[in-house]
Image: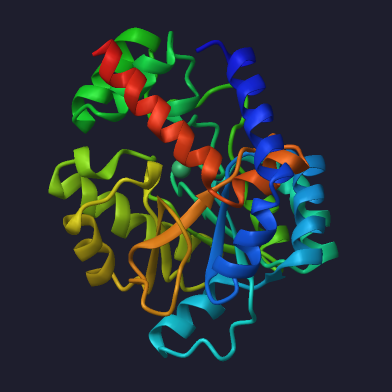
Length: 301
Ligand SMILES: [Zn+2]
């Protein structure tokens, strides 16, 4: 579907959801005793500021660590009603621009970074221009070695190649941010873990922990699966590696009985205006989007 049509459809759906008062219902019924984990990537500061100001008015923003501890203690008494945890994936260079907002609102977000991409001029493989959305989706479904071979032949991409422009945060920015930001690993190079061999998978998960701990001099106990993809194998490696939690992209809210290695999240569009943001907090647009994408994939394959 052309992007303009998709955006128009999203605006209409979001306006409809907000017009029906669904965001209020979800907030008061579903979120009262559950924790919402939001997931951003390369969000613009002006967009982020509007979202956080809205959350400050209607929700209570808490840290990931506070929430994970409450799961381990099986005790939600320290968790205020309508709590939200803000997480940001990958470690995009533009995240430094969020620092004034993070400081202003005291939100203590968790930024999960790819530890062999931050502080380098290496690129995220998914940012390499693909011909179509379908090709990108196909790449995500390939065995790791095949995906890398395909990227090398089609775009001359290599995970360790240094490019002219920098896509990820550097060490000075991270050190400046770490007073108010919780940095955690998101693998070394962002492969799709279930499509890796066991050796690749262990290296990506365990060495990203070692990398970041060396890099920042702090203990890292939380992980997030690239693209939200995981199987029991990844969970076992994460557990055995000493992590206390892992965030997925499984859509939904978290309760006291949620597995700490399968934390659910609500993915927010990095360019969402306030209406779309409020609609996305209900998860309805994302559920519709998934359904449409699955249908299109079926039709075209
Ligand atoms: Zn990611």
